[in-house]
Image (cartoon, rainbow, N blue to C red; front, side, top):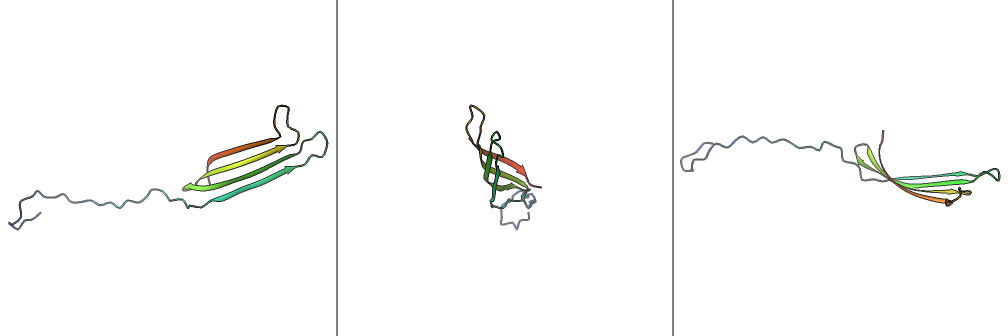
Length: 99
């Protein structure tokens, strides 16, 4: 630093290094994708059970190609084993990768 004589003497200031900072990731889009599906198997004979499954859910991008899934499944069996109900409900949260 140079002085003109009117200013008090100060030590030289170090040069400043300025680095641009950029995120190391690609922000995910804030969008949801609906998941849905239905399967139905109808028994042909008396000894075979009928079966139905519905799947409903949401998929959301999290980071780059990683996604979060929230899914609700309902399964129905016309002839469940003894001690089991005919309707099963499942709530699933999962993380995945989209190719």
